[in-house]
Length: 321
Image (cartoon, rainbow, N blue to C red; front, side, top):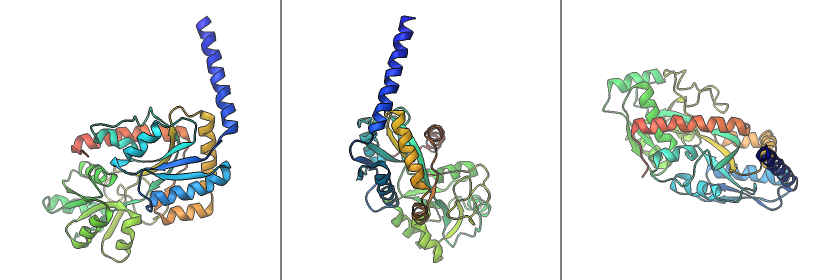
């Protein structure tokens, strides 16, 4: 009985301390750590959010780029940062995928982070070289089965979401495309346009110009529902491959022990920012669909996403080191 009383008192103190801390939060500049180099869509998105959050939080909100090691450098840095809400991570899908791909990962994507919100999904599309005689996913699958040795698909690197989207397609469609990894989207798209590749799963932000000028043909988006940015483009599932779904995402997380009241404040302010028309237009221009989920929804999604891609990695034998 005495032990239960002590535990209850400790819990009450923790709650009161957390609430008191939240009332003074933030007490100094907040840093959003971005696991990619400056200039890309994720970096631009982060700076857009930082500028808006600065006004709502009453403190400077800085963006710090820590690229490298499949986003693990930034993720590990934030996992070990003080859990006071002043250091946040703009996480990508690779946060949960990395432990399945790399032999050594110095963080746990579930235990070491407090989800704030899944901010947006990255619009990825399935594109083919014009020489591929397919106008939809069903026709592509038929062609792949009839030409098993002719299909190469490119990615922006081994273990990336583009790579795993192709492996998931192989598995669900029972086909065998050969994966060719590149160091970035630009060289892969160059080879797709040149006919060295036949298929690619890519961000619309980078492949869009090639689609518009007819260098490549877009067949579908990879998400379960149609993209808000491309409402007239069918999903892979509805275009010939039921059960296929791949959604690269970006979300905001904090170190695991961050007080719930601080997480709640950050989520509340972030959701308000995401409602701003200028922010919504900026996201669309970057090929991003806004989500704005709750911390609980984001946590549930992350756990399921980890399991899903771990199976794809295991079945395909993909490794990044």
